[in-house]
Image 1 (cartoon, rainbow, N blue to C red):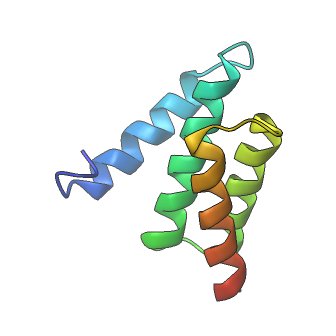
Image 2: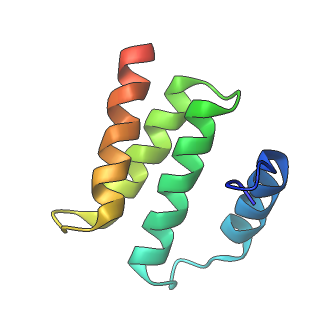
Image 3: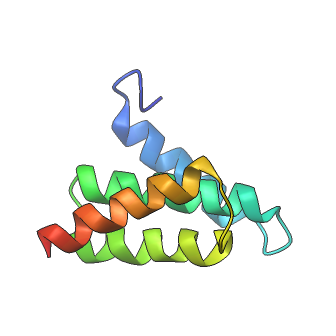
Length: 84
């Protein structure tokens, strides 16, 4: 949805996924969602502080892994801190 330009729909579905994803969901899935939410917060109307909090949450979940989403979350966190 996001890549098709339907940002509002992407935000809505990310919120639904967040509500339905339990604490027992795979760490990679929770981290991926937090990273995407952080990117949305940074690029579409939320505050850099919210983006930084979401990116930090993703990084906390991922630890020292070599996941693509760790690199993506670090990038969002850096941008959010720069804008703060």
